[in-house]
Amino acid sequence: MLTFEEARERILGGVEPPGTERTTLDAALFRVLAEQLLAVTPMPAFDYSAMDGYAVATAGFTGAGPWVLPVSGESRTGAAAPRLEAGTVCRIFTGAALPAGADAVVMQEDVVREGDSARFTERPGAGSHVRRRGEDLDVGAVGLDAGTRLGPAQIGLAASMDRAELTVYRKPRVSILCTGDELRAPGSPARADSIPESNGHTLAAMVRTLGAEPRLMPYAPDEPAATIAAVRDALEGADLLLTVGGVSVGDHDRVRPALEAAGAVLDFWKVKIRPGKPLAFGRAGQTRILGLPGNPVSAQITFALFGAPLVRLLGGDRRALPSFRLARLTNAVQQKPGRMSFLRGTLDGDRVNPLPNQASGAPTSMAWADCLLVVPADSEGFAAGDEVRVLALAEL
Image 1 (tube, rainbow, N blue to C red):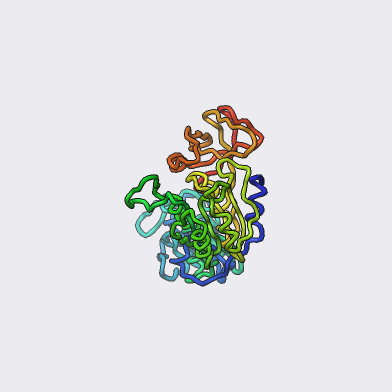
Image 2 (cartoon, rainbow, N blue to C red):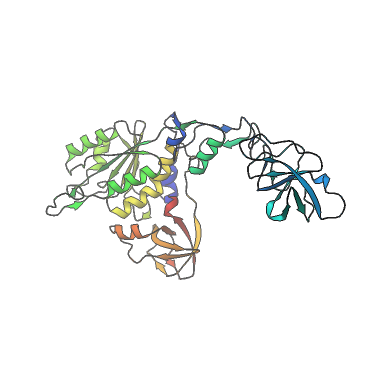
């Protein structure tokens, strides 16, 4: 069996994005940028006021205060700023261009308006409340690097850089093939010994959150020829094939031989983790294959740990791996040494509470958890108050 680190290194090695395409800003959410965005104009494009107030020339504040200066003109957004007349101040609003001749803005709360004049009790400092031209990005500066996943703020920055379209990596195509005679569609008529299939829907949702395109295949029964045919269909046009169940060594586990019969070459099929030991990885041509365990928690955790980073890399994301954080246990946890454990828990600030039900077939605890806490393979567990490594599920 491979260790967690060894398995992840093999799965993520040598991944190349599947190509690029152009898209509009409105369709770019959660896509990965495939070009470097350089500023072609300064940002901001001109000096402007960060406050409602009065634009002033600080050199005009001589002697001892207070100073009473006439108000001449007004600068507002969407209109050209007037030139500041010597010995006067100019009314100005947030976002409006700084008048030529002014070098500071005094916010209106610090000014007393007296008819056509303004009274100042403190001498302003040059540059106060002014956003300078090119302060955020000068011409030629990098706004966004290739490999950046585009969230709302990144799309906003691209729009501010006057980009209507972006070059992004093509969404990875992920086929999901669930296997087993016991499976039926949720909400369909129940039959003896059947269960509503949940893994496919869970994995498809996880794939969508990663900015990829899931394709949920028809269930494959536990019959060799049918499983081989289902695998071949699922491989067609896929960048990644996820199979669920049937990769262990049971008499009715058909997926591993079906993958090999369909031309796949398997690299490994066991990982030294808990839950999720029966994890297979291989390739069929350019398509990568992850054979996930059938238990719901095992399938979700192994995909989160191995599949999610792989999908991110396939989509061009340069930040594919989640970050561990440290938290203190509220309750003790125990394990038999030998495999690295990923336990479901809930975070409360810098404390983590392990959930009581850690069974690999219990989707309830996975739905209630917001993190996985890590117990190393050589550890027997931790006491309450011990510091442990934690992965937030929202980052997986």
